[in-house]
Picture: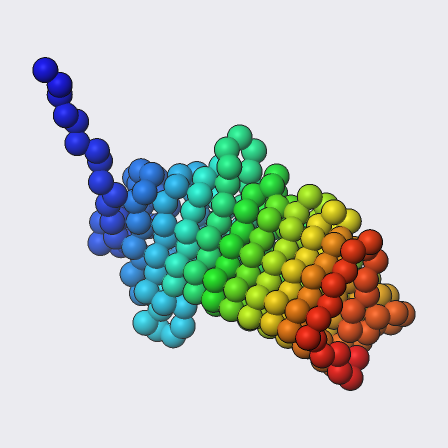
Length: 275
């Protein structure tokens, strides 16, 4: 005789109807569950180490869901595969999101989120990935953050993909006013905008390190500035650019729009204007 044991089904945990705080709902969740966060302002920080989804009511206005918090990061994902949907994150100190991989494959999937603000004394004013963690961003906006070191908005140490994202107003004390892709990472951006970013050193909009391949497909890099090379983009790793517009960027030394420092680069169907 065989005993059939039904598999547990995913559950929706509602904040604040079922649990008073986001962290309480996360603590009660099991893999596959969805934490549904009502419209309004909710307190962070929140730490997540389970394969779950956080889903808000939208990223804009009073009918949306906002998470505020201080500390090092408003949201921290550790050794888990987590999806964040329809949320606005407003740091009152520190960055919006830290994604760290140590023992298990780790990924953060952002869908129609708005990360507004953030600051850090190291890398990644809004988002930082560590240890090879994966980041995917679909839609939404990441803006208005500062890093004392590199990656005014985002610092990557793993693969990252952006599609249909607005990235703006990042400031880095070193490289990558908007994004820095460090050694061992990779960066692919499509149908997106990189706007109004500043790097004190290189890569006003984007900086990719050695062995960090870069792919830009129908991307606009506009009005960004580097103190040395690569006002729009500084690419050290292998680079493929197609259908891009690099417009109105400025470098203190070389490559107002684009500075290529790698062995293999392909640029096609792209426009460089007023750099």
